[in-house]
Amino acid sequence: MTSPTITPDEWAAWRGFRRMAEITSGRIVHDITRSTGLSSADFVVLMELSKAKDRCRRQRDLQVYLEWDKTRLSHQLTRMAGRGLIERDTDSDNVVVIRMTAEGRTQLSAARPVHVASVRRNFLDHLSADDLAALQQITDKLHAALQDAEN
Image 1 (cartoon, rainbow, N blue to C red):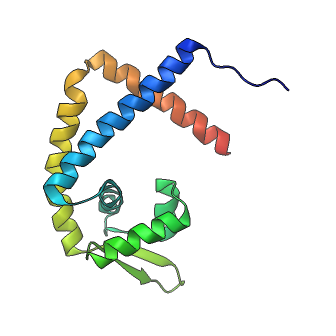
Image 2: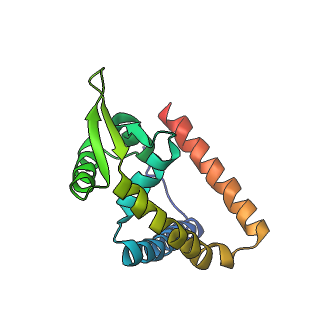
């Protein structure tokens, strides 16, 4: 079996994608952390919990959505619970449920406008409507391919 090869142009596209994603994400996370003290992981977990009408999710569903391993999620949730951002409960089926606390809602409310402003400043302001449409098409294509690979 021969090893797959990657052309110089393909390497340049890959490195550009990775660098752009890391720098942009890093700047946005820095803004959120500096303003609120929330880490990237805190923010992602709280955002996902906020999407649920009752601000809670089964731990397993959160793990699947985030695509984190069980240990990483467990450690993150332990840190967040220790800071009063979330609570863990066990329901009648012995399933662990994660619930955002009032402090978590307060912290997320403070972080949201910072997040929006930072996404705008570090990402959206530099792209045209055509750029955004092309990027959305690319991300949809890659997401679909990754979903197909799992099935």
